[in-house]
Image (cartoon, rainbow, N blue to C red):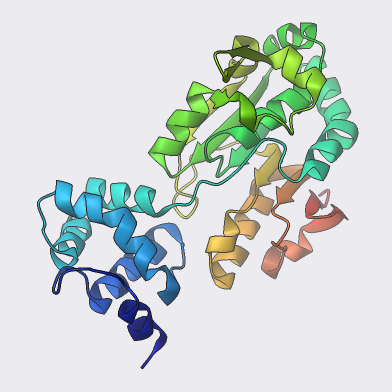
Length: 289
């Protein structure tokens, strides 16, 4: 018995004919081709639990019928991909990245912005927004007057994700107070408005961010380079060839001297290794032209 057959043997109480190994294989192929996500046999139950509501709501009845639906319907395929994405994150995750951004990168970027130059940051795979707002608070610092100055300059953070529900949470910028423990107290006081057990990011900070839906495996509409790119704990769901291609694209999208921050278990390999040099744990700088 192979791994997938063994995984299906362990699935509890699923009606005969509703969900079969062939359905999982078809979903796995579609998800990999569309979004680069690798679904191992052990994810068979996850696929069932997340797609079963969509199977019911579309009136398909079986996963086999739903597979045909997502093969033919771009909108439904997008809903399925969104349902299968994992959106686990928290404020100031891997805090050494924000220490580096604040002490090593921020001064130069603020100087350039003050001189009238364009400064762009990209939070790629922003999920529910905690990373995005951690970046913005780090760039602003604890001085509220800085937001007014930065808001008048050519500074912008682009935050993208493939999952619409995650983007909605990120753009709403409202979080439970008990999720803020990692936020430095001075930044929390400056940029968060707390009420009734929730905190909302201040308007001055929100004005510096644009949220967009984007599949990292698809076309990128951004014409200009970025000074900083964060893409952390996204590539863990991809196979190695996909990781190599994506990191190479990030390297190409960075301005000379720009910085790439990736997840703690991720590495720069493939063609990008010739373009990026490590300057800290999972922190890379693009070699100047």
